[in-house]
Image 1 (tube, rainbow, N blue to C red):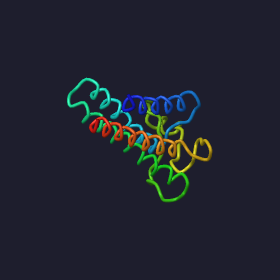
Image 2 (image 1 turned 90 degrees about the horizontal axis):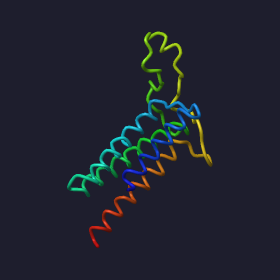
Image 3 (image 1 turned 180 degrees about the vertical axis):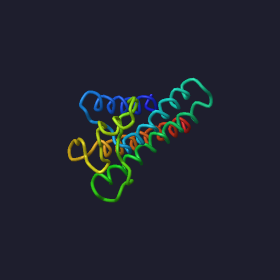
Image 4 (image 1 turned 45 degrees about the horizontal axis):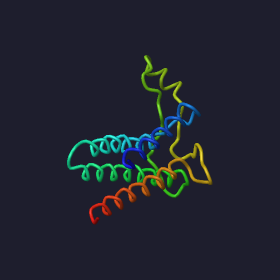
Length: 146
């Protein structure tokens, strides 16, 4: 359940922040979402397809991959290291590419859009994803030894 629930909740939170509160994602925010999408799919596969434990382990790895990306992104936000030079978000689906560029919200990866207790969203993704991935592996190991 963790392998499906954690990435699904983190993705839901990201989309609520984006569409409900105008916290548009930067390029590295998107990078963090992709492994969570994969984790949800792998977690669902672990529910229905054998070998179940293998798919769940892959889901845990995907969750932790998103956490590692989130940790890198948080480091960029806090100025600990440099991020990618091209880090902006353009509005997709516009009929006129020039208009899309001109009206796109520019979202920088090195600025914290929102934080809680001094920890950015990328930082929270790092914490929650790594701890969740470790918990999933711990539960997998415990079931194997039981």
